[in-house]
Image 1: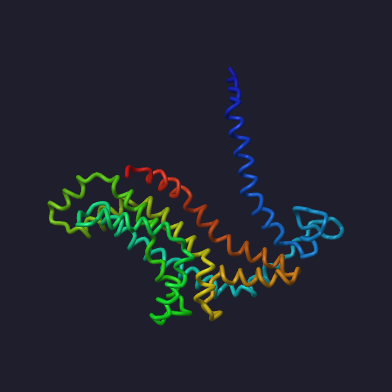
Image 2: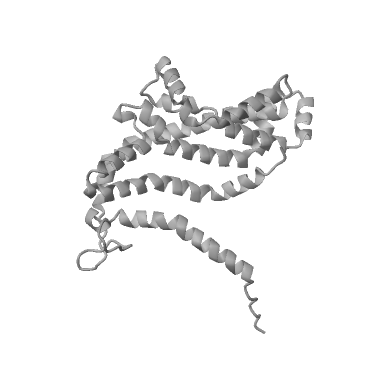
Length: 287
């Protein structure tokens, strides 16, 4: 006997419609970006708007040379290496120090802990652009101006990451730490061998977000980097955007460059998306 399909409830149908609209609004621009990167400048600015790259005869024609030009213009080999190196090192340093600070605020009792934590949270109210000049002065005094180290050191700490790691550690049972302390384990060993492995889902989420932030960073490299060999992908793409503003034929090349820069982040998200969901769920802990 065939089973009758249950009718879709009206409220669920409305949810599906809203989700479908949101998908179109979020994914649609990237689809247009990817397809337009295979067009010529005249096709992009043509009054006859088409999604696919069509030639004069109405046939589909993909201009792969846009990507060849974008690879050469962006010096993808050098810029990608710089970006990957800076983003990876900054992420590892950030996760280590922020998780260490978060553990100290959550588990170690010391005089003035709450006052210091509140003062740390207060710094979230300061816009990041306000710190450009102080960071610039510090980097120059340290002799790190126009170096890859200048892209890492000022952002070794993140108040937002400290707060989330503290909230994560607060949700762990104290019995495990107390048993380790009875066995003679130091505070750092408890943090390293017990607390940190338990916080792995949150570490993955913060690691991906920190990597993406450093990967997409544009303003700070623009200020502190002068040599082309130390440029990052975001800064290289910015120069390509500026060039395309005065040359319409470079516009599809700029779009191809944007796709090249975005693809690594999309792949990272696709690979780690289940960890992101798991980490966000694990982050819903008591304060």
